[in-house]
Length: 510
Image (tube, rainbow, N blue to C red; front, side, top):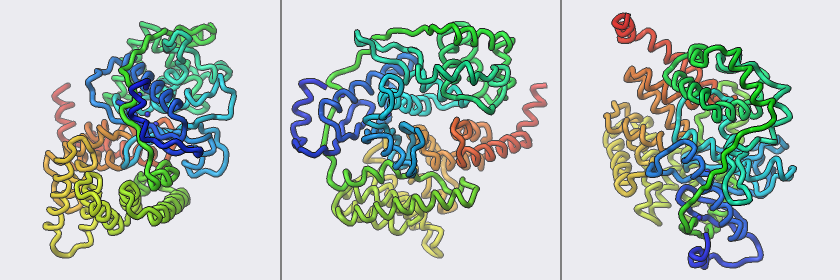
């Protein structure tokens, strides 16, 4: 869930000095950092984040020209604020999290953890969570859960050395005590989608380290992941390793040797790192707790009534507080924008459209306002007994206008697709391609992703549907959304197997 020096002075001069810390937003090439820290601290945060983004790009050989999706970073005071953002009023040990919603991807990390500094620092949390974003944003595929966490631990534990280089692959000391005790044999781990009693963080890090720095096994592991992404079973994909007993012995020797290879990497980033800095408006600052608590995943995916009702109640409390804050700042553009988002997520489409109208009265060409109004209008089509076609066309026109104003914003693309989908019309190829672009831009937005999966399934594009569904179905964290995605994945596989075209292809191959 993720900017410096003399040139920065002119940019931050407009931020008023105050005895009380105020929320500021600093924008860099890859991030928007929200923090109540000092300017110096924000500079340090920005530099650190950009360096780790560069490290990830170097480690994965991603093209520097790939257009980034800026990740919002919310630096809260401590881990108790993280728990509150998750709707928990008790200590869980969760240090931070990464997620996405209609506002885009974001991380919530603490300024301090309150734990032993060397082993569980805010930096480790921040780097770990950003690694999740990087993997999902730029390399969406089918991954074992242990590797998702192991990759994040590999990056999270890489530290800045005294000479300024980053020690890529430094040992994760926070996980050392658990690895030998809780080791799951690789004969089981590599051949099963999930295993009990697995320490996804500890063994996940150790195995990821081994499979990253051992040249021969690294090549085999890349083949293993490619096989999984191609739809092979875990057991079938694991054949690329040869004798799994030998693989397990090698991995154990590697881990128990007590020394780990790491690479000192010189990471250079462009300066000034911070491109702009601003003080948040009063309304936007007041809404930060609600913004980081905001969730718009489809509640229908939660099958257990009690769990669904609990989440519904949490969202309703958040919405009520949003309404209260917006009432205090009725002319704040961000507040109106966020209210439109939250009302829409709760199914209050008329209220969402009204909030969008208030925003557009202030900013007639606000892209998010236009797109959200379009979406709200589309969702209201089902209640119309007459004039549905003209209403859909009006919603579509707003989406087109928003897209013309900002080609990179995914919300107008989603709105354009919905203007067909909610009207009961067949979405044209252009609309489906736009939906794909929206999901690619916001890969963690599960609602849009599920829309795309359903569209592809309606066209009998089973393999494509499964590929787009895989990131949810293979989420390493247990959740109702993952359970629902796995049920749909099983259904898609059955449809693929029963499809006459599949049978014809199999016969031709034989």
